[in-house]
Structures are given as structure tokens and as C-alpha cells.
Image 1 (cartoon, rainbow, N blue to C red):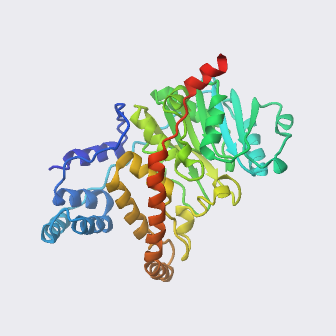
Image 2: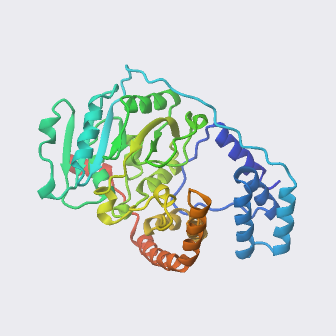
Image 3: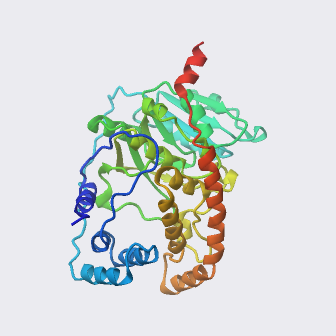
Length: 407
């Protein structure tokens, strides 16, 4: 089978095998040589089920990759074979040790969320692994700033950096400049977390030699991870609200791209660059926090991420839109084929929702009636993404800035 290596790799990944990327140059990630229609559909049915196999079959025809007759035969052939379930990840866990010498700087950007921020700082007081630094980058308008943070938390190694303009990437990069610790823990301000959060991240990295430990987040209306997925395994993503990153590596890849200052997915872009630099990124399903998705502040300042995937699936009206910054990632790292496929996936995924049969029918009806409007909105995002692809990436040269600061 042409897709045998892909199927084996998928089983390895979900079975808990740890593989590591070899650092390579920037540029598009290329697809392998064309895989037969039969192999593609066997793969999709085996690991994703009949629904996604049907979607891929339609795309193989509509994209002109194979004649309809070839795809039809491949579908029938795939349905004749029994599907073997993908293996579950190994249930591996780590036990935090209180004696670890690792130094950790906690980096929290914040905009107009005083109550949430203070709650997060209170929880940092209770951490079993004490932070060497707590760096808060405050982008709140001057009239609403909390100027008593340092005085009210004298027991924390707290340093507040105040910026005039709000931007998630520029704020995090400003904070990285002040980090003196070996590790940087990226957190949001509107979260609740257990006293072992830092210790769990550190324990995983020390036990495995990982460069990045990625935790998970729960949110209202979303079920927690199944018990079988609460061990650690290779991580396909970076989560900017619960990830520990080796500080030297974070600086080496240039920190956060300023293209995302007013949009979402800055952490996704950083995760891709870390992986391509050869970082070992592990996901710890047991290291969880709760994300409140505060109704104000954060990316809401830029009218971004006002609708999440989870919230969109709870209601008949409203989609989880694909935005310019997501499409910019497609163009920068994967190319035109990815741009096209992401648009279509997001367009049709908006036809489904959680809930009863009547609600699902209503959502499907509304989704079909608004397909054209959503496609036009995507067109605007594509135009913005193409401009961004010309003017960015805008990465930080931390080494040069440190040299200038010493001179």
C-alpha cells in the first residue's frame, strides 16, 4: 500500500510512540507524491469513519484528482474491509517532584481583566513549584489599570510590564525580553489551575527530555478529555494558555509573530516553528486548567475569537469563522492547497451542532442558507491573509536586543 507508512505513523502517534522532527528551513511543507484513491479512502475510513471517508471521496472528485468511477470503486472497496480501531495512547503519567532545581518564569499578558488576573496571581501563590519570575504584561488602558498589583502580591516575584497598545504577540514578546529563567510558562489571565500546574510541566520535561510541555484546558459546555487520553504523548499543537517552553528555544525561533497581534492562532504558528526547529513537544492530558473565556479583554479587544468552536456547536445561529490569521498560517507553512481545504472544511463543519435531532435540522437549514454569505466573508479573509503573507513574518531578534541593551 502506498499509504502504509502513513497508517503506521498514525498508529504509532496514537499509540504513544515519540518521534522528533529534524530541523529544516522555513517554507512550505510539501505533500508527498500522490496516493491512490483506494489507499486514501481506506485510511480515512479506518481512522476517521464513514462520514469523513465520504467527504474525502467528494473532494477527490471535485478537485479533479481522480475520475468519479475510480473513486466509486475505491469507496466500495474500502467498505468491504473491516475497520480496526486506532490504538489508544499509553496511559503514562509523571509524578511532580518538589526538589526540582528548574527555574520557571510565568508569563501572563492581560487586557482589562483585573479580577481574573488577581485570581490567577492568588493561585500562583499556592504552586508547589515556586515560580522564579511572574511577568505580567498589562495592556489595559491607563484609566483602568490596577496599579496596586506589586504592593498586593509582595510574596510573588512579580514584575509588571505596561504597554500602551494592545497586541497579544507584542505583549508576549515584551515579556520574553524580561525572562531570566530556564523555562517560560505561557498562561492566559482568565484561568483556574491546580497547585501542581508548574510542577507537573517541569516533571514531564525532566523525565522525558522534552523542550515543550503542553497542557490541556477545559471550558464550560465542553466535556473533559476521556480517561484514556489523560497520559502524555507527542503533541501536534502548542497551547499559548498552558504550555511550558524552554526559554532559549523560544528566543531562538523568534518568539511570537507580530502578524497575530490582533488575531487568533499565534500559538499555532509558534508551535509549527518550534517543531520545525526540532523541538520535542509533548502533550500532557493530565495537566489541566479551566479557561473561562472572559467576555471582555484579551482578543475581544480586537473583536477576535468572539465565537469559539465549542460555543458555535451549542447554538443554531453563529459560526466559528475561519479568520485571516488562520489563513495566513496556511499560506506561510503549507501553501495554496491548505488554504483551499481549510476553507471548505470550516464551511461545511458549520452545518453541524451538538444537541437533539430538531436542533441539528434547524442548524443544517440555517447553515445551508448562509453558505454563500460565509464564503464571501472567507474571501475577505483570504485577501487579508495574502497581504499578511507579503508583509510578515515579523519575528523578534532577542539576541540582538540583548546585545544592544548591554552596550
